[in-house]
Each structure stands twice: as structure tokens, then as C-alpha cells.
Amino acid sequence: MWAHFEPVHAVTYFHPRARAAYEAVGLRGYWRGYFAGRAAPLGPTEAAPVIAVFFSFAPPMVSRALPAVWRLATPAEALRARLTGAVQALAELTYELPEAHLAEAADLLERAASAVQTAGRVLGAVNAALPVGEYPLARLWQAATTLREHRGDGHVAALVAAGLDPVETLAWRVAVDMSPQNLLGRGWSEEQWRAARERLAQRGWLTPDGAATDHGRVGFQAVEDATDRAAAHPWEALGQDGTDRLRELLEPMARACHTVIPVGSPIGLPALPA
Image (cartoon, rainbow, N blue to C red; front, side, top):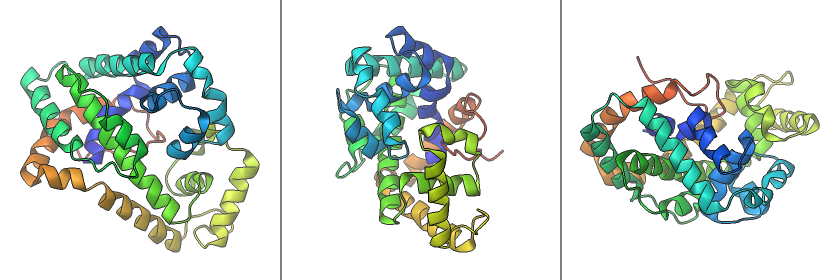
């Protein structure tokens, strides 16, 4: 299900209309919009909570953005901008789908999102607490966002439980399946990258020349499995029939949204089956 609802959420990062909506409220530059939009449900926060919950960004990078962005746009303005831009993006991408299709998908996705378990999941909780959108695309995007942040909180917990720090996690993904260019922009120094690779080699996850080992693949698969288990409750609550129907409804939307997500993006979305 993640592969079907994540693309709906991800238009906020990659579609020109989403970027334009942030710029319209004074958030010029990609990272200002990113940090302000994603952190806005937390309120006018300082950097420290965002460093914790976003997980993969170097603290100095987050500290340059927060709290400075709140002098450009309030959290309420950032929230309106992110929803406006996402809805405009989805409207452009799904204009061929009937209104009834969008409304049914929004209903089912909201049912799943209403079942998220928020204890210990900060980003999932603050997104779940936001007002419900008035129109189907707004409802759809917000529900997808709540589910995505809920799943992300669980993923971070699994990484921490596995003893992986942020830069080690990124270094592992580069060793396995991601271009370094897509992850180097998160503020870590070359020395920090090198030290992370060395730590992964010491624990047997990488060979001395930086290749992933079978031991490392098994260890990281355990993280992915724990993430899936922690994200299962909304789909259990929706039930098999509801989940199957929602997957069917989201399929054409996810494919349309994939067209604006760069190949090899840091989200790591798998391609949908042909």
C-alpha cells in the first residue's frame, strides 16, 4: 500500500505547482519550502525536534532552516501553501478520473488514516490532528500524508532499534540501491560519510571496499520488516476488501504521480508493476 499512497503525498516535493505555492507565501528555495511545509504541523518549532523526527538530515542543515523560515511564513501559511500546491498538482495529474473515483478513494484512505496509532509517532500524530479537507483531492492528499508520516515514524524507530544512525542509514542505501547524488544534499560532511562507511564495515554490513554484504542485507531487511509490521494497523482496520478496493482506485493516481517523481529519488519508491 505504501507504494500506492506515497506517490500521492510526494507531489508536494516534486511538482512545479507545489513549489510555486510555497514561493507565493515567501518560501523561496527548495529547502525552505520542504522544511517549513513538512515541519508546519509541529507549530513554530525550533530545530531540535525536527532534527529528531526528520532523522536523516545533518543538524547544521536543519538549524539553518529553522526557526528562520517562520520569519518568512507562519506555520499556518506554510500548511495552506503545502495543501494548495499538492491539490493543484493532483488536479493536474488526475483530471481524467471521475469525481466519484476520487471521492471513493478519499473516503477509503481517510478511513485507513483515521486508524493510525499515534503513540510514539510525532509526525503521524500532528498530521492526523489537522482538519479534514473540504474537497476529495484535499482529503486524499492529507490522508496519504498522515499515513506516510505514520509509517515514517515507525521506520525511524526501527532504524534506531537496529543501532543505525542517520548517516549510516544513508550510506547503506548508497551502497545498495541509491545514487549518492540524491543523498549527499542532506548536510553531512565527507568525513562523516567516510566514518559511517567504516562503522558499517566494522559491523559486517559492508566490505572494506564499500559493497553490501549478505549479513547487511539480512540486517536491513529486518528493519524493513519491522517497519511494515508497525504500519499494518490502518490496513487491518480497513479490512482486506477495503484495502484491495483502495489499491485499485489508487493505481492510476500513483502511476500519474510517478511521472513527476525523479528516477532514483531519495524516497526510494519502487516502480509499480506493469
